[in-house]
Length: 291
Image (cartoon, rainbow, N blue to C red):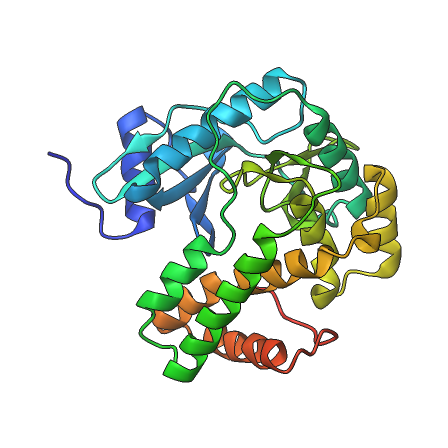
């Protein structure tokens, strides 16, 4: 029986050792919903997910292999995932960004146009269920006050009812599920790929557009949004269902901050309170911080 590593970093190291990989320089990149590490000696990125996500991770690896086989520029998996008692560890090609600025939004628009035009993948993907993980997080949180918990639960229910009634002009199909410019990566001098496929599913294609438009909260400009929609070839701002998807995206971003606040992260707790305050007062112009 394998011994459960105490922390994601220990799990990443143990998985590397199991595969005979060079662990020199193993370093944390971020620890948000998924812990991510850089393995410079192997030009690899390691993603450490909870063991209950094992099937999801395997599906993500299969999907990205199919996408790259179709000529789509998705981040490339390197090995089969490694299962330890508490974690599922996957390995991905590293794409050094060399301090370059984030790829402009129009690159994502072009990538999504290509993605949405692909034939259906030969991989069973779930239907997109918005806010499912947030509902669980809200229910289990130890730090949320009861009034906030009640407001979030009622708001989730209202948005899900509205979502079920949406009439999608673009129709259902393969969606990335977390497509925004921050998940694009330079691959060489001028080529851009799309990463973080954990939420890929079958759903209304407008989902992948709403995520970028919601970015006005993080300083995304009207110019960047217009360049994005031109590259995609459709502007959802004329569709009356867009506010529902943006509101869903707003709430979706709270999940990781609730979990971090529960773990004692005071910076995340302050940002969570700021976001909740602006949402409860319907302040759509308030800026949110990312970290």
